[in-house]
Amino acid sequence: MQQHVKRMLDVRQIPGEDVDVLAALEGLDPKWAFRRGDAVLVCGLEVLGSDAVAQLLAFAEEHNLARCITVHSIKCTAQARKDLTASPTVQFESFSENEMALCPLDWAVQSEYKLLSTPPAEPADNLARIWITDPVARYFGAAIGDVFEIVNRWGTLPPETTHRVVTAPVGA
Image (cartoon, rainbow, N blue to C red; front, side, top):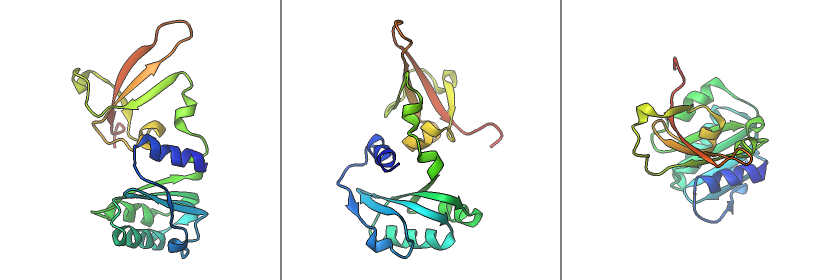
């Protein structure tokens, strides 16, 4: 799992060296934690609760970090989910160990996903959609309105390129 999580940071193009910060977060008792660039990654928390979110927020603000990504093994409490979205300065993301057990990019053996920095000339209304809750969109850290380029390879046929715009789920 550690390789999948580090690969997620590579996919998001977060630069810098991995610095172990496990000792600074010993009150949380994670399995491992490291910092890269403006992000901190904390994995192996059994339960992500409000106290853990408060400690992570204090750590992130003290070290001037913009992102905090957590991976928990059992659950994230309802109050912690609310607390995760309340910070105006730190972007929190929470994944379960089950979500990170397999890399979403490895599921789609025949598809290659790329988050575009500039959208295609085609209007977003004409593009197919991918929900923001899709594992691939979450893995890339995509926001609503971002566009993916997907190259599908079908055996001996030439590759087919499609674009999908990230949207909120229907009814959300």
